[in-house]
Length: 137
Image (cartoon, rainbow, N blue to C red; front, side, top):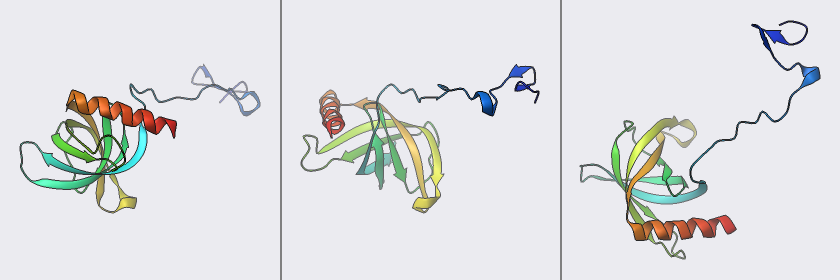
């Protein structure tokens, strides 16, 4: 590195000339809300029911913890159970696994992102209302 913070022909900020405003904000289509909800899921087309948990939710998908590793692209039928006091007691969706990793601190669970592919319009409306109410808290 040169005297002016040059490296490989590029100018880099030095500690004396720190630059600000270089924060990389995550861009998402829908805001996500942290939540802890139980789910039942089925690997399509299997009729075998398994259980997991939702960690965060948005209008476009959920982050879930599962007891098994799934392939990216795998489609699931998921039933999310909401708190009794909400206007949405349960919602069933078809989703696609878009990413997966292991979460060691939770034991042998896998964390994955599920993008909604099919959602009943009435359930989607109730989900939007539920999320809107969460945003007020």
